[in-house]
Image 1 (cartoon, helix red, strand yellow):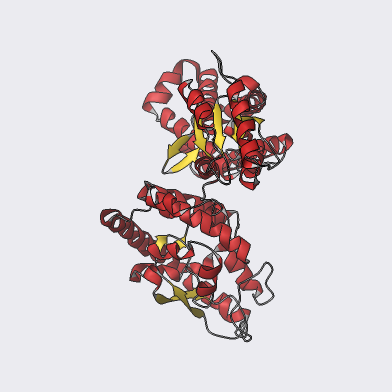
Image 2 (cartoon, rainbow, N blue to C red):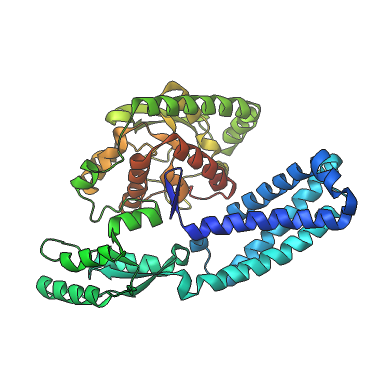
Length: 458
């Protein structure tokens, strides 16, 4: 896997993106040569044709990203991939038509874009078919053996079987837990059988619930010296899912980890970026403020803004400000989490939640320093003691400032139950471990996609 901005991406996904960038640019280059002939060199070099093709390539890749074409785990069937591809090409056609209509000078040449889109459609459909065929070939997959027989091993196996983009094929594991000594002998025999001039396995995943006295060390060392990769299950799960699984997480994972370091210089840089982004956001939103105030006022009687106490850095309370989206008697019976299709939310409030308009006043909290632009979402003090008691390491969220958006928001969504909050914490712990300015910028970028597609809000 390839690490970018402290996030791991399957090598296949990066190759897919690079190949499609080449296909897009090549399609429009060929179209330019076909339609302009001897004038091609002049248009590309002196009329900014090359830069226009670069822009077309970036727009196409961005549309593909927003339609999840580089996240195959979110696509359930092959036909859905082709359907989304055609949607991308359709949106691209309408977008280019609008751009050329209003800005004719951005056109490369007569019929160049039309021919380029036709070539691109054929090229991408054929390429996606070839890519799908290659994913199914054994020669392009790593052979993986899982050492383990419990729930953790089952999680690893299920994940690898569902994530075809990971490029790993499980060739063996034991699905039933037995006596530790018998399990060790069985694992040792299986590992020894993989040895040879050309090992029959490429990677071994250690997914034992309890390693004490159950790890076949000699056989693992022999395979390691034969060139086989030996990896702990937690590291693999972290890379593939972007979260730290609480099951199996021990204090040693924090003590010896490279992450979980809050550096002053890093925090200053993140604070500057958060302040600048919040200031720009408030300035851009200012023209819309009267219309939003009117919407809230007409939706139901009550105040425009809603103030609520949240827990921030170091466990200290602060007051968060939002546009009101619920009726004024929403919590007459006490504090509780929002739920899907919550009846307390007004119709206008539901729209504002889906579009995140209700969160805009929190930019003021970012300017004040109560929050950062990126970080774990702040929880209410009514729930924190209970969550700390029920979920291990929950208090680690208070190591840094809470955020307007976060890794859990772009990768998971809203948590309205204890189980969902637990899973959200797993994403938050990943963010705290790998926190960096680059990761913050990536989260900001993905937040735009979340807002446009109206995901994760309740």
